[in-house]
Structure formats: structure tokens, C-alpha cells
Length: 223
Image (cartoon, rainbow, N blue to C red; front, side, top):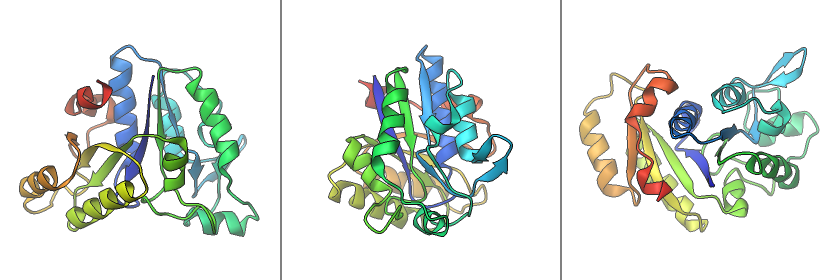
């Protein structure tokens, strides 16, 4: 069984898109897979309770429908950093309930992909960071790099922070979030040279996850 933490160089770089693409790739190998978004802010009120678009996308891309509360145990209303959204609701985010949901999903699937929230060091509380999920659960990390101006700096800083926290960066995915980015191939080549992990693929702009899966290769991280 494989479990990975999907981190991002920042908010809005396409972590969910990359995670859904990975789920489709693994499903194509015949695996039973599930995505998880332990903490999500910016959730909408529905008759079923608070729901987050990213978590719903992971639920839809998984092999079989799992209870939403397992996929997204902490759903917060305001589109803010989780520690602020939680404080406004009088909620304290703790890892133990998140891990219980993770263990249930892990016991029922070949692969579980855990998507982070924001960047590597986003606070979940005064004493907890998003990175603590990967660190305490001992999950190998796949970094999603949003390909836009400034991405090299963000990617290298993220990789350094991942290593400093004692986590293992096993690969990175480039996501073409800015189709008009200048010198994109040169930037990608720089990232290939500078990042201390292999590139697992480059996701083209505007291609849905089920089709974008052909652009990724997990051979190196699944061996």
C-alpha cells in the first residue's frame, strides 16, 4: 500500500488537480484509491452540512464513495488560513481525529493521497502546522509546483523546509497554472536540476484529471 502527502508551493497552485490526476493514474493501474483533505477552509453550507469543493473533487475521483466526514474531517466556513477560520468558529484543530479518519481510509484502500492545505508551513493552530500531518504520520511528500513567475524560489524554499522537518520529498509535479508564463521550459529545466527529487510529470493547462493522468509517471516512487 502507498500513502503520500501532496504538498503545494503555495495556495492556488493546483494541489487538488494534481491529487485527482494521481488518483486517476493509480485507478488505471487497478488500485483501490482514495483522496483525503484533512482540513479545508472556505466550505459552503449544504443540506448535508459544510462541504468543500476540493474535498468533493477528491471524493469523486476516488475508487468508491467514502463518507465525506472521513475525507474532510475538519470543514471550516471562512476562506481563511485554517488557524484563523477555526478560531472564528471556536474550533481547535487536533491531529488525533484526523488520524482516525486516515486510518479508516487506509484500511480500505491500496493507496491514500492526503492533500495538504495551502503551503507547507500554513498554521492549523497556535501549535500545529499543516506540515505536522506529513511529519507525524510519516508520509512521503509529493510537491506540486505551480508554474508561474516566482515558482523556482517557492519550490526550493518548500523543498528545504520539507527536508528540515525530517520528511522525505519523493517527487514533484509541475502544474501549468499560467499558460502565458515566459520561458516555461527553461524554468522547468531549472527545477529539474535544482530540486532534490525527480519530476513526476508536467500537467498541461486546462486538461481534466482523467486525461492529464497520461502526463504523470509514478514508477520511481512506487518501486
